[in-house]
Image (cartoon, rainbow, N blue to C red; front, side, top):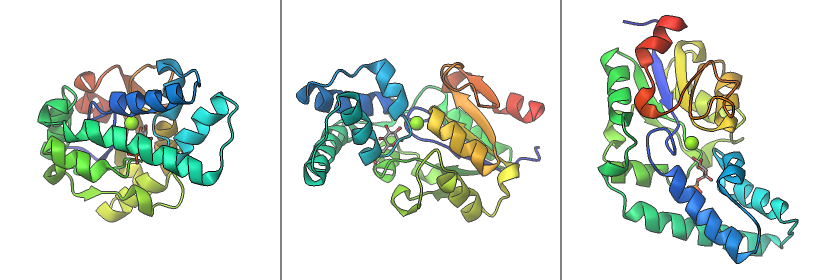
Length: 217
Ligand code: BG6
Ligand code: MG
């Protein structure tokens, strides 16, 4: 058993192999706009909401566009992304994702999803794991996006758990900041140098060891 009462998971890049689909969709947009954009530049977009991501890409190219055109581009990006999601199945869960969530539940922890994506419910349905969570935060309903703590606090509040009794899992630097600002233990999934502020980092979801985190904190 554990003193921790909840595990709150980011979705894209932590449980789902969907961060690559977001990147591929933005890459098409950047190429259309003749703005140089690669996987390294994409790191800064992880965890960032749709319009914030577009603003970041436009800034990389020193491009300014009228708001209506920006909305049209963001809608086009979302269409590319949804085409990819429509083809996703439970096989697009990241290795170890189902086991990690199951371990939290076996330890008696509540589980929630804190994704910046407004497509999270659709993706969870494609992956077949929606029923594994006690709460799925509505990205459209939170006032401030990551790195603000709002979406993680919405989860702990809905679960009736103190943030200090919760562990958050994130693959983005913005998400790690959000977890820390919420007052939770921050587990990074990815490159340690990118996620340096996390309490602990595992290279992949498959290597994320919930029992080790619990034992250490
Ligand atoms: C986050 C992704 O989970 O969701 C970002 O890391 C993405 O890349 C953001 O921009 C918003 O997603 P959506 O599906 O609402 O455009
Ligand atoms: Mg993510």
